[in-house]
Amino acid sequence: MSMVLILELSGNSLTGEIPSSLNEMKKLTTLDLSNNQLSGEIHNHWKGLKQLDTTDLSNNKLCGGIPSSMCSLLLLQLVKLTSNNLSGDLSQSLQNCTHVATLDLKENRFTGNIPDWIGERLLSVTILNLRVNLLNGSIPESICHLPELHILDLALNNLSGPIPPCLGNLSGLNSFKPYHVVTNRVVYSQEIELYVKGREVEYTKILPVVNAIDLSGNHLKGQIPAGISNLSYIGFLNLSWNQLTGEIPLDIGDLNRLESLDLCCNQLSGPIPSSMPSMTSLNYSNSSYNN
Image 1 (tube, rainbow, N blue to C red):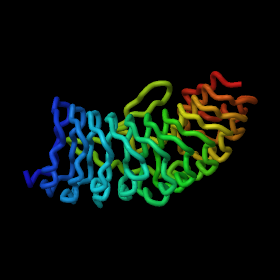
Image 2: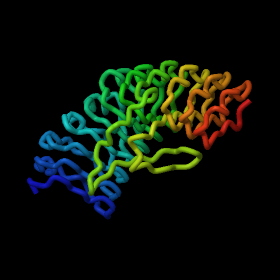
Image 3: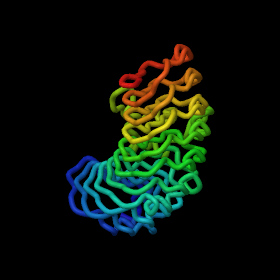
Image 4: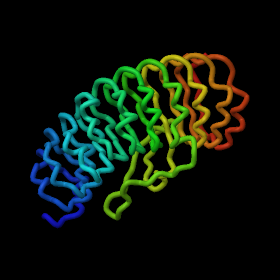
């Protein structure tokens, strides 16, 4: 199979481990083994796959960490490992993912802090999805330095501390910059599931214009940063189920492209800002269970 470009075996009942002999498929560009029952650790034999740009191993029973040789591939842009039993410290798992544009690690068992150097090394990332893991510590301010970031989902972890005040500086969300979907081939189309408007929604075709931040279900404290109103191109903002205090920023109405705003189940006080009626794109707003 040395001439194969795309290996697509998703949605079957495959069991056992991923064979290390995949490393011999020198021309492989897309590997999709998602939605099977594969188990064991992800092997560390990836260096031979120099043409690989897409790896989807989601919805299996894989364990262990992310092998360093996978992320070190220069052409690799999409890594989707959602819904497995992967674990380990993120500072070790992410350090070689410097060229990756989509890093989707949702619903695993990764632990430790989000590394401080993330804003220095993952400069190509447009989608960072760490939803439903066991991460703790604070959200590092360096995450504000990711120039291409359009989707940030850190929901349902054990994160604490304040929301970084610099979050409003994310350049991918405060100017019009539609990002490039990594792959949109006949066989494999990139997709991501986001929890917006009170339900889970899957995005595929319009993914290049989706802009979202979800920090819900953590232990975040302090005020909502005033600078968050600078994110003029954000479509979905979910800060619910935290311990946020203070008032809703008075100029939140500047987010006139926001479609969904969820601030429920915090300790916010004060008035609903008079600027909110100018949010003409808003069709879902939840501020229940506050003060």
